[in-house]
Image 1: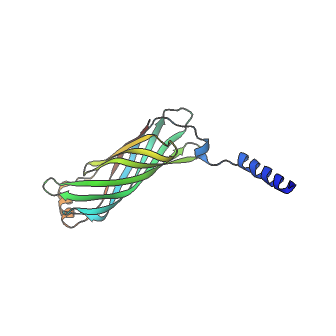
Image 2: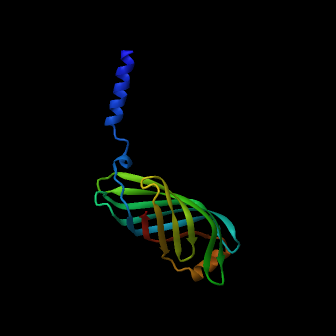
Image 3: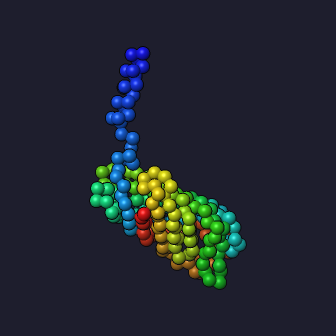
Length: 186
């Protein structure tokens, strides 16, 4: 009986001393606004003139984050997304149109002291065009659970003439550009 008591006490002490991770120790940031760096979205098998189901993956990085709570030291973030959409080229307009988008992802927050925290989110609205991408959703797990999230990108490549040729051969597989904003709010 005494061995069990010592073992239980030791285990309780270990749990009290051992940190569970940065997320457990990080205070809520409140509203966070980040400005951008690079962004991309990938289409597989590739967008062409016929509407096809596309697997989507993407990444966006920020250069600076400003949390509302001054105790929070997250100064940058990285977003990854995965999902699917029906997409096609609109040749006369020289553009891409995606619909029926289903998207989820995660945000990794990086602090000045080297610690990180992760937020998982599900998108409720996604708009992908040849101009950029806008995603709105809610954080469903991890850091800042329950907060709303939106981010937007702008693509930095000319679309018209080159895209018409790529659309005809189902070769639009990647759009690259800049993250405009990442915003987390109540």
